[in-house]
Length: 379
Ligand SMILES: Cc1cc2nc3c(=O)[nH]c(=O)nc-3n(C[C@H](O)[C@H](O)[C@H](O)COP(=O)(O)OP(=O)(O)OC[C@H]3O[C@@H](n4cnc5c(N)ncnc54)[C@H](O)[C@@H]3O)c2cc1C
Image (cartoon, rainbow, N blue to C red; front, side, top):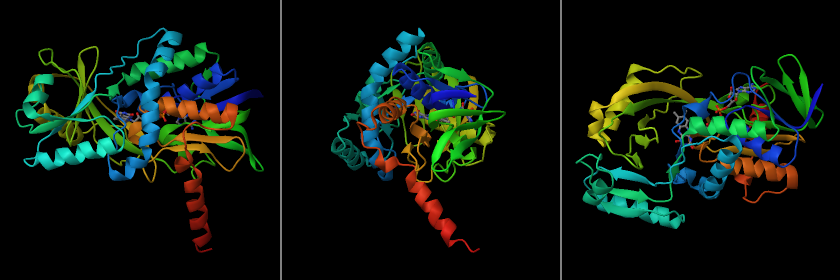
């Protein structure tokens, strides 16, 4: 029987980065993926690195997000050095365009919120915003520049992270997913794979939106897929430096000249098909924000499945079975949160403490709810 210090279920950017951190700390690590690693949400993503909360409920994630943003340059440098690959990190800031007539009040609310959270944000008049980003629509009334935000080519990053993990000694197995956790009393002793068991002191569940399909995991990580449809455009005449946002859409320029537009948020099970309605929604909002995109070539369309949790927050940390750790439910922020997730899991396993408080994201918040509803259910 194979035996490791850490067995990780899931070879996306999260599982890959955890494997890299643990292998570099000297542990014997293996990643098991049910298919080819790196082809899930981490491949489908837009790669925006923005700690700004998308809603008031997400404000509690800001300290975690800020810690991850701070780690990003060092994380990218390490991954690029070990893997020998470029990951297309662009630390150029992002710009949010406001269209409403009453932008003055909206602008001061957004700026105050950001500053209150310790996030840099600068108000811009429409003409100044268009000077920075000439592709912006004439209809834009004002904008917010967030100079510390960034983006990364998530496909390149995920491939490089997996390569770096392997070069650092992690073993990566494709086409051999986890059916269940291997439970022995109050302990998780490893993973039950398709045709074998693997023994591990630590078992880490990082199987993205499929995490809850691993037997024994749903009470801790009741994640479900949230589909996002994306389009890649090429418009050689259009200059775009920063990630641009509107209320309906984001546009993400890549180093290779492509501009990604996304994304829908749909609860359609594990269906990954693109639809006419979804792509139409993305394209029309993209053209509203940057009208020059009407002439762009469509290079690619795709959809991916974000791992969403009931409260839309990540699920991080130890469970009530010794040796079991969860690192999933990153929803719309998994690329952003990769460096801090890998760091915290490594710290917990090697030092039994973490440098950023992660209690708020504990898998036990769902375990308790699952136990209560089981007690209430009629027999
Ligand atoms: C359209 C879209 C846009 C996005 N944009 C952004 C963005 O701009 N910024 C940002 O930060 N985040 C973004 N996200 C979210 C981000 O991509 C995800 O949160 C992140 O990629 C999750 O990574 P993961 O490794 O947990 O999951 P995945 O990348 O899905 O990896 C999970 C892996 O687990 C494997 N697996 C499944 N079942 C099993 C099993 N039983 N056993 C073993 N392995 C298994 C899968 O094959 C897969 O390889 C976006 C996502 C989408 C879909």
